[in-house]
Amino acid sequence: MTHDVAALAQELLTMAEADHRAAVRANGDDPVEQLAWRRLTARHGDRLAAIMDEFGWPTADAVGEEAARAAWLIAQHADRQLDVQRRALRLMEQAVAAGTARPRELAFLRDRTLVNEGRRQVYGTQIAGVREDGSPVPWPCEEPERVDELRAEAGIEPFAEYVAKFAPSSA
Image 1 (spheres, rainbow, N blue to C red):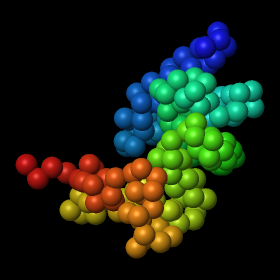
Image 2 (cartoon, rainbow, N blue to C red):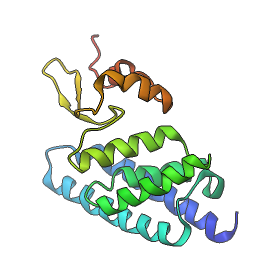
Image 3 (cartoon, rainbow, N blue to C red):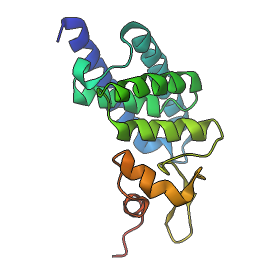
Image 4 (cartoon, rainbow, N blue to C red):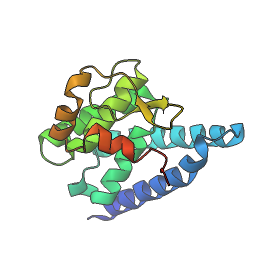
């Protein structure tokens, strides 16, 4: 790894750490925390756009597995910057086709981008809300009857297993 790429990898990891710390409070009732989250994700989205200008998509081959995942997380959370999400999606599609990015992460970003565009998702990865019994409700899917088949193709566990992670424990 050259110095520039090593510095980029460290920057992506630092951004992902800040994202994780802020995300915990982002969905709470405190408007100050919500605003801090929006500012953070906007700053990160802007930086990811500049990184894509300079380096293209930061693949695992280029920056390492953890930093590549960090770049995906930043794109995933750039919800108010559809141009950044769409561009990341295009670059990730090329990377997946070249075997340098994971289809699973691409599937999550595709669904997130579709939902942000007000369209139906493909893989059922985005949750719209929670029922009274605590079970998650996905955003509408293009082909709900094929969701598990499409998820399997992308390396994602079946929908029922996925949502079980979010369900309140019965203990």
